[in-house]
Image (tube, rainbow, N blue to C red; front, top):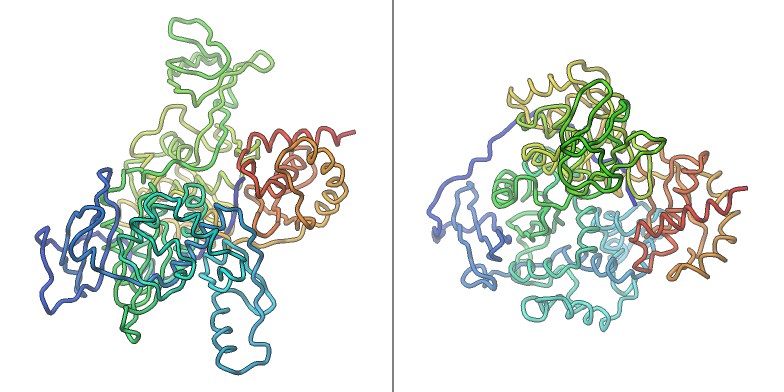
Length: 605
C-alpha cells in the first residue's frame, strides 16, 4: 500500500548556507569537562554491531567534552544522567496503537467554547498542536504535529493491564526500562536515563517502528524551511527518524531542556538533548549531530530498501536471453549469468540473483525486475548519470523517486514502469556502491507540488539537466540547494507525510463503491477470514498523481481514476486494506491483490 503526499517547502535558509563541511573539534577520547563547562549537548546512540553505546557531550562553543564507547547497561556519567520524556511518551503510545491494532478515532478540536478560565486556556493552547476548532486530526498527523490530546490514554481507552502486559513482554523492558510498562508514566515529567530510553526504542516491534519512522521523517522535514533546521536535514538526508521533545531539567522548572529521540535508517536508536527546545538544539547543533550519527552508518544508510518497483527491461527493443554457450534460457526466475542478445546485434551480459524473471508472452522475451525504491533509484543513477558526483547524484535520486511516483502505473502492490528513454532507463546490473549510497542517503524523500523530471544536458521548466547539477555539485552546492534552485515551486519532504494529504472528494467512486460493497461483503465474510467491513462507507479522495493508498486510521481511500478495470481493482484493493485493518492479513499484499481482482472479475458483465 503506497502513500503519496506533499512535503515541506525547502526555501528559507538554504542559500544562506550553501555547502558546509562537518568539522568536529578534536579532543582526547576520554576527555572530561571542566568544572565550569556544563554540557550544552549530550548524545547517546547505539554505535555498532557490538551492541555498545556511544556517549558524547559538547560545550556551548562546540568543543568536545566527552567521547566514550560505553557498555550496555552503561556505567558512570551516562548511567547517572536523567532526562524527562517530554513529548516522547506520545511516540510510545503511537507504537502501542499500531502493534495492537487498537482503534484510534480522530480527535476533534473544540476550541475554548466560550470559556475563559485557566483550564480552558490550557486546553486551547494544547489544541494549537492539533487542529483548528471544528477540524479533526488522525493518528499519523497527530504524531507529526505532536498532538498530546489525541494520544491521551484515557481518550483512547487503553487499559493499564493491557499496556503493561504488552511492554513487559518486549525484550529488555523489565530490566532496563521498567517505566515503559507503567501507563501512568506516559507523561512529560517522567524521567529516565538516556540508556533506558534507547532500550525502550529497541523494544519497539519492527512493524510499528517502520510506520513510526515514516511519520517521524515527515516531522523532521516539516521544519526544513527554517534556517535553523537546514544543517541537520542536509547532513542526514532521509537517514534520521526522530521525535523532538521539549520540557525542563528535572528539579529545574525554569530551565528549558529539549532534544530528540528515535532511530537511524538501519534501526539503531539515538537520543540527544541540551538546554533549549528540541528545535533549538537541532538548529544549534545540527552539523555535530549529523556528523556523529553518520559515523557508524553504512554508506547506503543501512535501511532495507522500502517499497516495490516492477521494471520491464529493454521495453522498446526485441531481444532473446541466452545462457553462456548460446542455449536459450528457461522461463522463470533467473539465477546466475546470462546474455541478452538484441536483433540489432548488440549483446549485454548480465547476472541475476533472483530479482529478474524471464517470460515469453507472444513468443518474445520479456525480462521483469522487482526492486525496492532505493535499489531502483540506484540502478537509474548508474544508467543515466555518474554516482561519483556525490551531491548531484543525491539530488538526482530524489528526482528519480519523484518521477516514479508521478508516472508509474500500479501493478498489485508494486509501481510498474518501463526501462525506456521515454521514462527512465534502468541498469540491469546490480547497483554500484556509490549509487546505493546516493539513493540510501535520500531514502524516503520526494519532491511534490509539480511533476518533475531530468535530462542529460537540456534543462527546462521542472526538468533538471544532469550537467547543470554536476557543475553545481563541483562548485560546492549541496544536494538540497541543487533541488531548490532547479525546482523552486516544488516541496522537498517525506513521501509518507500525512500533513500533505489533501482530500478532494471523488463522488463517482464513492457511489460506485456503495453499489458493490453489499455483494462483496457476502463473499468476503464467507471466504476471507479476518474481514470486517468498515462501519461507514469510506471517503474516497481523488489523487492528481502518485500512488493510490488508504488511511486505515481515518477510513479514507485515495485513488487516481475509475475508468479502467485496473483502476477499479485498485479501489477494491484499498477497500480490502480497510476491511482487514484489525487482522494480520492487512499486510499480505499478495492475498489482498488476489481478492481485489476476484471481486472485480466477478463484477464484470
